[in-house]
Length: 250
View 1 (cartoon, rainbow, N blue to C red):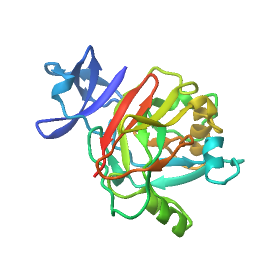
View 2 (tube, one colour):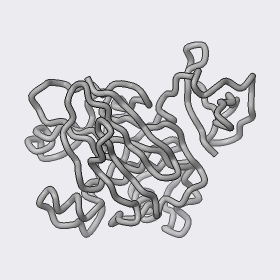
View 3 (tube, helix red, strand yellow):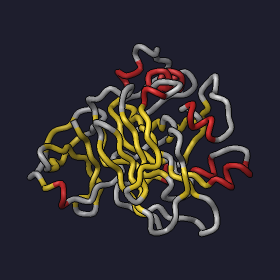
View 4 (cartoon, rainbow, N blue to C red):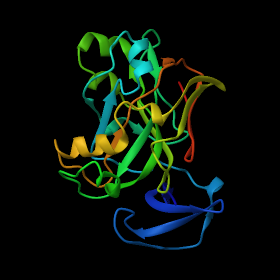
């Protein structure tokens, strides 16, 4: 199943994609819902980020090759940082560079969307609390990341959290091809089976530290090949079984 969030009469609503059409949903995709209204062609709707998270929970250096390219050893426990929810944008929205001199990097990531209130769950139970998965781009201001000594500000500029195009509910997060393309050229290419800490592990680990709420998003880390973006670029995050998230840069 593919859940979307889109504009209808200038208001954000949830929908479900079937056969190239979007069916609006009444109720909550995190609870009970039912179809409402006439289906619309997918090409005719303005897609938004597929959810509006209260928390963006992100993990650094969760692929060994990415840790190595930055001169770090693979972590022995998860490295958690927060990204402001106000950074979130949807498919087709522009990533806005805050200046033209700093290095702003792309980071392709599998994002996990939490389904319900989740606290103190085991690794074996973890996926029962996941609604589904989407593509995300952890856009990063490298100079600030280095100078601040922590990563929140460097990751939280407006537009630095692209997500989409939809939430897919019925895939295995443990074995998915993940790529980043800039202007059609592959810059990152890996598989989620290379994650150091798996999706079930991360959900369980987080739930033992804080309560996860419906719609919260976990960004699971990026593979090697991160690189700078410039105005005029088009950056795409493509994940097997989900699709492609595309954003221009200005």
